[in-house]
Image 1 (cartoon, rainbow, N blue to C red):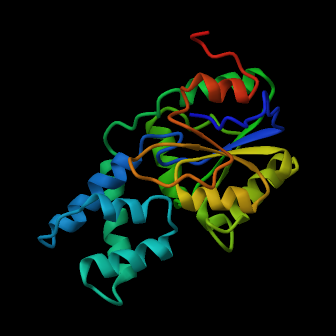
Image 2: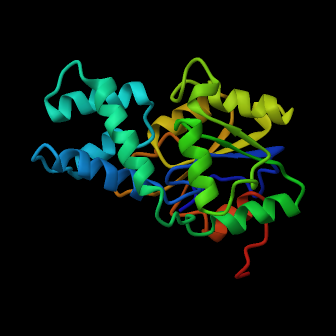
Length: 228
C-alpha cells in the first residue's frame, strides 16, 4: 500500500518508468533465460539468485553469475550466453504489467510526458517494447549504454529528465528493484516502488504500491482510476 504520509497529489512534470518488471512483464523472460543458464550446468536457479539479479547492471550481474555458477573470470562469456537466451525468449509473447498501459495513456491524456529508463541494453529494450506493441509509447528511451554509469547511479534518470527538458526534482520515477529505487532517489526524483517479485526490498522508495493498477498510485499522480 502507499505510505500513510503520502501527499494527496504529486503533480509530476514527467513520469519515468523502469522497464523489466515495472512496465513490461519481462522479468519472466529473464527468469526463464536465467533458469536455462543454470540448467545447462546442472544447477538450480533459486529465488535468492533472482533477488540478487533483479534490476542490476550487466557488470554486477556478471559478477553475481560468476559466483553462482562457480565460473570465476567468465562473466563476459556468461552474459553473452544469457543475452542470447533472453533474445530467444523475446521471440514469444511479451506482456505488459497490470495497469501499466492504462496508466501511461492516462498520464499522456493529462499532458504528462513519459520516459523509460532501463538498465538493459538498447537492443533488448527496443525488441521487448516492439513485441509488446509499445515501440512508440514513450517520449524518451534511455538505456544502460547511453550513460557512463548505469543504475544504481543516477545517470540514467538524469539523462531521461534532460531529454524531456524537465527538472529531475519535479519528476516521478517508477521502479520495482532496490537498484532502480536507489538510482531514482539519487537523481532527486520522487520514487514509487511497485512489487514485481516476492521479497524485494523497496523500503527506500518514497511510496510503495502492490502494482501499477493500484488506485492509490493513480490518485497520488492526480489521475482518476478507470474503476473509479
